[in-house]
Amino acid sequence: MNVIRFSDLCAAGRVKGQRVFIRADLNVPQDDAGHITEDTRIRASVPCIQMALDAGAAVMVTSHLGRPTEGDFKPEDSLAPVGKRLGELLGRDVKLVSHWVDGVQVAPGQVVLLENCRVNPGEKKNAPELAKKLAALCDIFVHDAFGTAHRAEGTTYGIAQYAPIACAGPLLAAEIDAISKALANPKRPLAAIVAGSKVSTKLTILKSLAANVDQLIVGGGIANTFMLAAGLKIGKSLAEPDLLDEAKAVIALMKARGAEVPIPTDVVCAKTFAADAPATVKAATDVADDDMILDIGPQTAARLAAQLKAAGTIVWNGPVGVFEFAAFENGTRTIAHAIAESSAFSIAGGGDTLAAIAKYGIEQQVGYISTGGGAFLEVLEGKTLPAFEILTQRATH
Image (cartoon, rainbow, N blue to C red; front, side, top):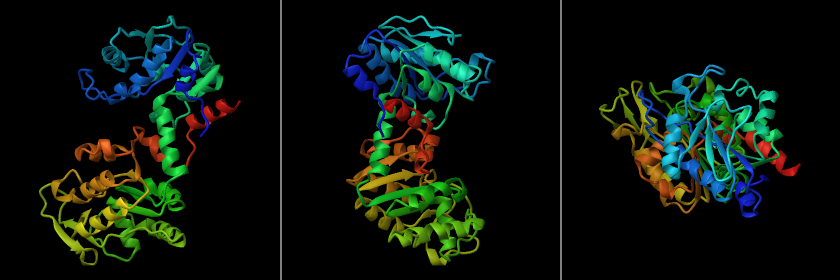
């Protein structure tokens, strides 16, 4: 994917004295008192901002926070807590600027935080008049918010159309590189783990990956639907019987390419969905009518782990069982450790996946952890993200 990289502009000395507008993702969780409870996204935004300051730019940074109403700013919509934390991380005062669309005062070597961009009328719909005003604020637009890359909004797309230069910041560039490595030019065999409660929410992903991967490992409620499609009984487990034809089509698509969807041979069942429910390991052919399948069995987990350790590339989205419950976490834990021990390049994304990675302490062993939930899923669906599309256009024109 051919995009202009902000790091290259800095290295070439093209940033000194320029007005640089950075679209970051500073949408962090807060408690009822407005205190930030988790600051990963703020910390992740610092390298780009520091890069711009070191290069001698006049730096403007903005982000959305929460779901504000356009044109109706409320105190809880404010980026003030973010600005305070950002200042601590940068070791300098970060001024928060409101009503900034018509002009911003910032000198080279300074950084200002522009108040919640989603409050600006026209932001969500990418209104051309807003986009042109945003573009007039800067000499260089830097997109560094992968979590918003699947949205065509004023600060993610419109500004990139009209700014003199539009480029990818280090975070976005890293996502582009990781996605290209995993999906565009993967080292084979390419294994994908797609898990979750419903086939319907991941159906386009399953179909897209089925045309490209060597192993398509399904887990969670999705695996139950595939077990039904393979002729197995699943008791009262969560599944979508009306999507059996779709599941069969994915299995057939894989088989036609000499690839496979491994169906569990053993499972962990319980009579109720509860943390303290007694867990029973059963052969996949022995599931009773009143059983709920809450995890893959140890035999299946070991087989999948061996496949993952032999893979060249692994894409992971979703835990394979109810890993929050100790009795039903073995499958996800086994898969996580197999990915950690594999020499494959691995890319993982999605909220539950990140929670599993954190739980099993394998952050350092995963090749790339994607922070963009919806954006990551749309990439897996084979869609071209709006941010990638416009940045590619601007790199060639």
